[in-house]
Length: 76
Image 1 (cartoon, rainbow, N blue to C red):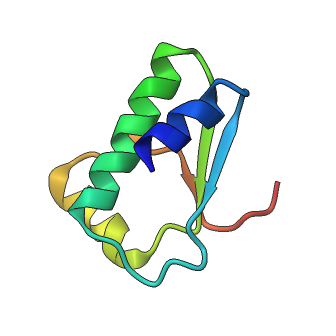
Image 2: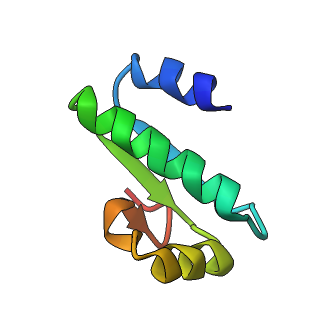
Image 3: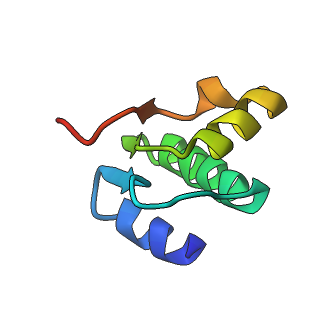
């Protein structure tokens, strides 16, 4: 999945829609942070929408919420 996200980053902006993901763990959080770092290095934009509450809680717990460009809905 990490390599796929990096490949997509080469095509420009990336939107990750987690709206249909009921829950995720720290591995998913690490993957999202890695993709965000890669996007920053490439000076590309990333948008994460519909983050599950549990994943948002983990990001809050680890103090990384501000590193994730999130929105509640997929409305552009």
